[in-house]
Length: 513
Image (cartoon, rainbow, N blue to C red):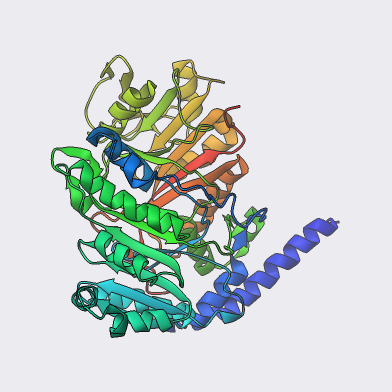
């Protein structure tokens, strides 16, 4: 006889399936109110212990006089450390306007005013990308669209009777502004300084800004100007919950730095999440549309808060992110596995230099024999899969347990395992979970490949993600890969998602003491 717990599980699964089928019955017509409602019914959330882990109060940016005493090297390092810091934890993020050019928002508890929403955009030109942002917000929350062109805002700034300009009076008369996005191609520091002076941001809940103006040749005074306005925003109550490094502004001759960052900031308010992967019994029975919906939502969100996210290697494709918080970051002696080199050694080289780790690099596809790249880096002409040692065509393959045994690492701490193995991750993960070899892995990084649209593969994919979760791993950082043809329309909603995601996990059962 089934136990009472088993009966409850079956009943819950049946209820979810029936509700989802009813709500999504006409989803081909993109009835967004039905889709959003059904999504909330089927999304699972981890137990919520606190609204925010910590709402930091003390301003981390010193005052101007202190900043001006720093030399160029120190102030630039301080700036890049600041813009790569997640000051508060936003578990569930939604990208509006498409993963390639859209904007991240933090999903918050909207209360009784869930359909009362105001959105503003200050931009150089009102184009189709901006329209997609507003259209998707309107579909979800009936957001009111407001566009201010840079030329009109500059005119208001230069007006001798600023308080009487329509822009100032309109913004001051508004109630809460849910989203304020700013992308004007430069001069954001001056604009924000003016808006803060005129108290035009006091009712803004989420402030989404792309900063330009830093280059390889910038003087210390330019960094001071940027940090001054970031300090003022912090003092005004804004905290960074997400950021994006924009590769369009890579420093000439330095692929580790970019001069453009999009910072996503919010005021303190109740948040939603974190998301949890479905239990196996639900994965087996749930329709494919909600499974694919969770997959695409999960892989742009977070489940645990890492404050300091650093890019090791290239800012563009080829680099990888590392949680640099004290309890998780590598410290010598340390071991890193890098599966999938494809001729780009920037991550492997940098992680060995910065942290002093011994790096084992693997790739059977690049035609290189086993060799020592440096004192710290060993290359293996070997691939990873989820079966015992064998051949895939001409390539030699092993599973992770066999590789650890071969290298004498069984039972040892592996600080980072990174894999970009072109969809082979989906076969390797179940074997890694079953063998138990992940228990001593501190950080686990994947590039997940495959169509984002519903098909039967999502049952095995979601089961694999649940297996990682059951081992104690939680997402700390994620972003879609937007290179080439990766941005893809999601057939459930018509919105742009990605067929390739970089996802970063921390083993919450294995922190440094």
